[in-house]
Image (cartoon, rainbow, N blue to C red; front, side, top):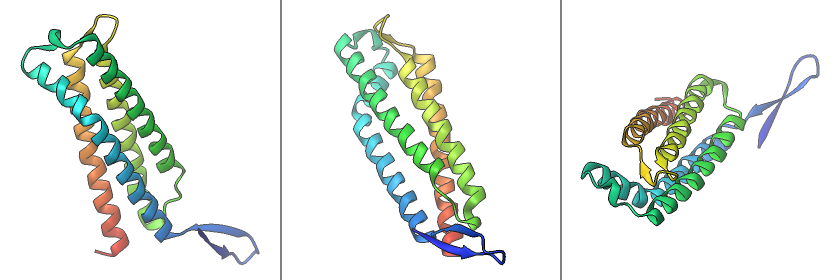
Length: 158
């Protein structure tokens, strides 16, 4: 997993393995996409209700199941964020890796805000909060995509 680098003074440091790093990033991206695909049908139901002015027609069961699904998905995203933060980035991608961490963190915040927009005590969706969280997630997704592309370019030397 790590190559050992021996310094002149005999101190041993672990150098991040580029292949391992790229594989982990790929695994995290794949897992993230799978989580999003799990939640998308429920998201679409809420989005359609908002767009058509029919939020009041969402049932208690729909709201509760969507809330629970979003909560579980966001917890999975939090675990993926922890993996990103724990990953030792090779020097050549360290800066963009930090930007990826930040973008993923913002994405998770947006997901939590979407959960919070589903007000189970009122059996409704706060559409302003929902829309704002969606916008935040979209912007974070753009940043995440940029970071992944940039990491790929730096690793491939392009």
